[in-house]
Length: 84
Image 1 (cartoon, rainbow, N blue to C red):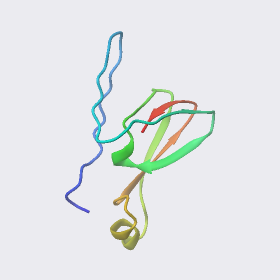
Image 2 (image 1 turned 60 degrees about the vertical axis):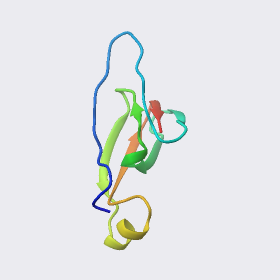
Image 3 (image 1 turned 90 degrees about the vertical axis):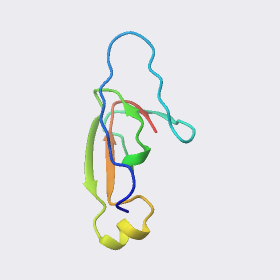
């Protein structure tokens, strides 16, 4: 629970190519206005600037220990592209 990765935000803009490295396949979602997805902070690889995000604790300590997501969860709300 305390030894995992945290959320690191890095903004990238302009013209060119960006390489993103991850430990699994990437999934692209095109969220519609007001559509949202909740994911672990370690599963969010990127999103467009118009996508709103919020980070919250999962609530109970037992959920953080045994729920498989860790102590925090991220809510991404469209419209816009999200990469998980």
